[in-house]
Length: 187
Image (tube, rainbow, N blue to C red; front, side, top):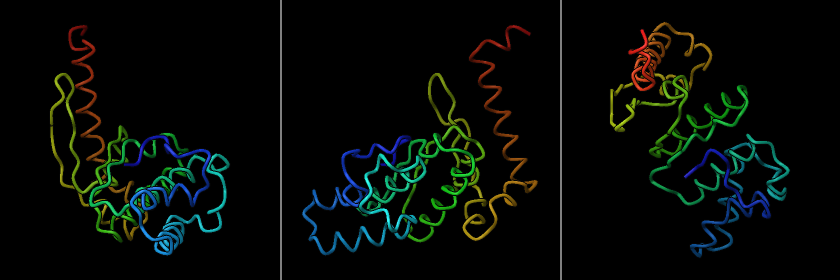
């Protein structure tokens, strides 16, 4: 699992955080060392292995959290608002990294986000949830994640199909919010 905040061990270095799961599972040291090196290369943190995580930026900490998750070689990765606390540029770069990792590893990634644009860009399948009671309101099959693996994120997000899907979903969510807040009754 990758949380909104890195949930890292602040007293440990980057390498110690990434190696934590495999160490707890008794993986041999040599294999752990190779795994940490490979994953730090993958998330572009080579050279930071011995740095304490509290000295890293928010985006770097999220990359450590992602590497720590991948070190356990899970079949499924649950990401709960992992990019929400990042600035716009770092968030967009991290979206590209998530797509790259998804394609390279073949892992199933379940991403929970309140950002409609992020959900459209990163998801093959998008589920819009309705509140009170929580239920699936509508599902979408999307082409944008596959396009984003090799394509330009800004260009994809500017495509008419992307904009149309974004506006449809935002309108749907806005209508649900109006119902909840009683906006329909006030008209």
